[in-house]
Every structure is written in C-alpha cells, then in structure tokens.
Image 1 (cartoon, rainbow, N blue to C red):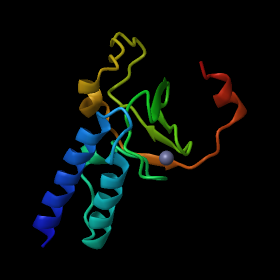
Image 2: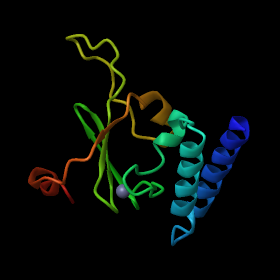
Image 3: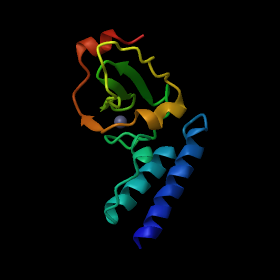
Length: 136
Ligand SMILES: [Zn+2]
C-alpha cells in the first residue's frame, strides 16, 4: 500500500508541474493538496525534491517569480510564498568555509537546487518592515 501511495504522490507532483505551466496555474495547487493528503494518510515523508515545490502554509505549488520569491542571504536562501507570505529558510550547504573564501558564489539556476538543498526550517514569522523594504 505504501508503495502505491508513493507512486500516487509522484504522479500528483508530475501533474502539478504540468498544470503550473498554464497561465492560470491550473489545478497545480489542488494536486499538491491531494499529494499531501495521501502522504498524511500513509505517513509518508515526501522526498526532499518534492518538499521544496510547494508552500507548507497554503499548499500552493511554487513557481519561481509567480507564487514564490527566492532571496539569497548570508544565512542561505529564503523563499517567501507570494500567496500567504509564509517563509522557508533553506541553509546553503556549509562547505568548509575558510578565511580565504576563494570559492565562487553558486549560480542561482534551477539545476543547482539539488546542490543547495539543506535542512529545511519552517519560519512562520510575519513579514517584517525590513523585508518589505527589500521589495522591488
Ligand atoms: Zn503559502
């Protein structure tokens, strides 16, 4: 049963990704909600690559620039849901950072996501004044 549930979750995220390509977002959020329900029902933790795809606050499927905003900080990446304002902080993987800091900054391409994924910390803090000031 658990194996079937996992396949179902994978299918739903595939569908969500396809729907998110539509201008109106389609049923992407709906599929995320369903996938989360399946996960809850069978007590399955989503693989890391899925957990970065949606908002834990409102189950919105995250599309960069449309439903989520990503900012780089010294502490890591901060992703803000543009629908409910919930923030997730994703620490950059701490490689041995010596005093020389010769390592070039990682580019912010989609393909770099896997390399950047660290422990995910939910931060339900409300938007602060300083955060608003950084909006373009
Ligand atoms: Zn949200």
